[in-house]
Image (cartoon, rainbow, N blue to C red):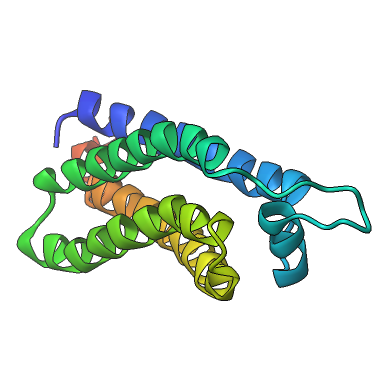
Length: 164
């Protein structure tokens, strides 16, 4: 694999890690990670003076997230074109998992805000699976892009005999 591709993949993985980290942090700060916190955020809480999210408000958030999640998965999976068939087989189910969990995580709030509060568990599960699946895919991407690099660099080094 070309050095420019390796560098591009490295920078993409680095920025993707920053994106995932900030998403997890912002989710915790704004919504939280527990069932009660998600219930309060989407369905409201009269005791805490929190109003329920409207379908229009949730849709305004969902639309750009669908584009961003789709683009992230497409670009991440695209880099596996340079991988061996074995690594491609490992990445395909992971990319499919990310597509499904990304869509669920983005679209479930529409159903939750419409009154299907029982889907909060699925929302939490899809968020967690998307985050850990993304980290795993990025790890595989780094392994694939840098595999063989050390061996080739070591093979380029020649040992010259000392002059007598």
